[in-house]
Image (cartoon, rainbow, N blue to C red):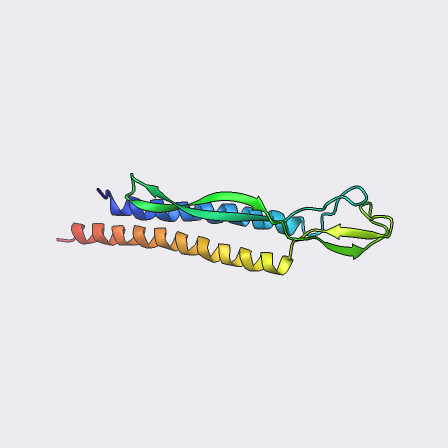
Length: 140
């Protein structure tokens, strides 16, 4: 049985807000570490992290909510740059650099921000509709 529609709408949208917040946190971490190399010669640098979403049924709401299923690391290969002064440089002066593409991360951040805004707008719209209904009931 479906309960209060306002509670259902806000529950679904708030799960979207939480999921996108976690996604933005991971993207921010990736961007912050885009140039974080290892500290010893030949050491691996920072590995890009990713977020995986899943839908989860919520019996109390009578609907599905979005959740973060997992955060994992991107196993793609590291690039190598010539930087003999870096502490992580090997004998040939080559350094492994993170597999983070700042441009792709910024696009992901923008998408997460828009999804966050859409969920927030959903809550605002539902609240506005409830307020209009109350105003209609007050008017003789």
